[in-house]
Length: 357
Ligand code: SF4
Ligand code: SF4
Image (cartoon, rainbow, N blue to C red; front, side, top):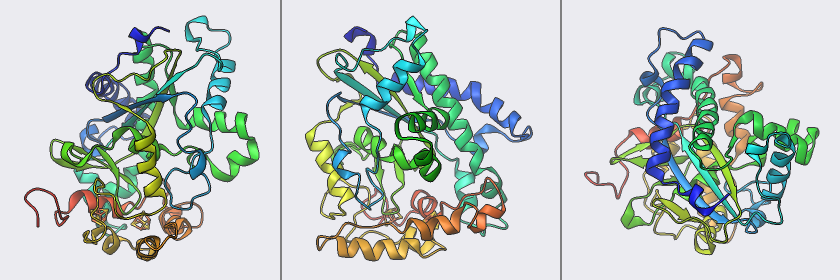
């Protein structure tokens, strides 16, 4: 794979992902039996962040035991590359460099934002918020198909072999690399932090707008055309044997400074000026919107974090409410909560945003 083939820009990948959405979105709706639903009622156009880094850099390695809900990722590039080479061993066009030659990795993040009507639904009572409760799971399915379709498009456009980290691929990878028991205990999400990759590639300095950033709720919020968005995230990766990380238009260089920035977040340090939420004086919309109390517990942990403790997020409190077999939403399959980030995106009391107090 030559350096030339990896000339990707955020704008070009975003365009390709919008085309992918047009193709796969209606199909997923059809599969889900939602023929009467317009795609635009569910999701908005995808938002993309691209970041490149050296193969031998593992930005999340020393964050793995942190409890902050940030950076918690166990898969290494070695494991991903080995699995991929094994799976594609009979297909010469998909050959990727052996671990000894892979020198650069490009990790892309695609956010498929929930539509405004979905987010409004999230903020209503869950029994009456029919839009949100019935349909939020579909956005995840569409995002999965979208990243698979996008990866194929990029491959066909000559950008090298592109591995889409769909739920299915991640589960297979985790099972291959870490074992079936690990997978059944943690699922795909527990071993690969899509949010951290979104942040590493997407966060921008304050004067450039914030791109993709963590909020106090630990979800990723993206900004486009002055509006905030949130929704399912998916990654894709490209391994290259070029010596330098690609630094084309819109491709962030994931280097020491950026990784340090993520580490500060994982440790709950509150002083970084470039984050979405002005923690010290931030609004409380996500805390007030949370029905389970998880955000209140998290907020208290954040306050203590400034005194040297990592800011734990009460995953169990949140999950028990929002889904799974134990939770209220487990009764209604395909439901979700997400009021914390819906409140963040939809309400206008956030300090530091133009036109707001
Ligand atoms: S998803 Fe729901 S329960 Fe969990 S923190 Fe957000 S608002 Fe609270
Ligand atoms: S709702 Fe307010 S406090 Fe919560 S993450 Fe968003 S900006 Fe921060």
